[in-house]
Image (cartoon, rainbow, N blue to C red; front, side):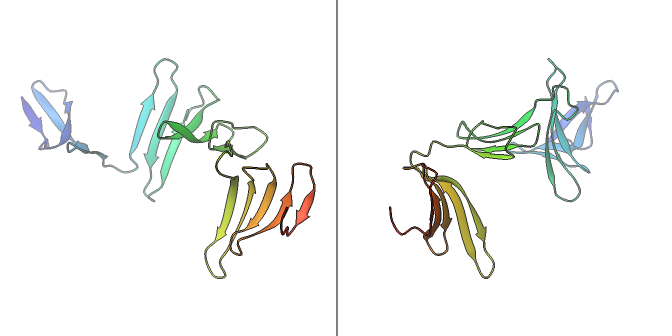
Length: 173
C-alpha cells in the first residue's frame, strides 16, 4: 500500500486507485489535538434521523460561527451552553437569550434566571475607561426588591420594594 502526501499525523483517505491512500494535508491529528487547515474551515454535524445539521465555522477575518439547523429543517432549534453539566446560557431560534437556565421567553430578548438563594439576580453595566463607573440592577436575594445600585460609590440609588413603593437614595430600611 502506498500513502501519498507524506502522511505524518494526517487523516488517511482512499484515493480511488488500488492500493493507494492519501494523507489529507488540511486535516491533521497529533495525538492531542485535531486541526482543520483550509480557507474558511468548518465542521458539519448532520443528524441523519431528521436531516438537521449544525456547523462550527470560521472565516478569513478570525470570526467564529456557531450555526444550529442551518437549513431550517425543524424551525425550533437552539444553541445551548453547558458548564459542569448545568445549562448556563441558551439562544433560541428567535434570537432570544437566556442566562442561568433554560427559561427563554418570546416576549423578552434577554431573560436572566436564578434562584436568588445566595446571590442577587442582576446585571452590571461597567464603563472601564475614564471616568470609570459601574451601575447595576438586580433583584435582592432576601427581599425580592428591585434595586438600582451604584457600584462605583458602593451605594443604592433606587429601590422598588415588594409592595411597589419606590424609595430614592435609601439610607436604611
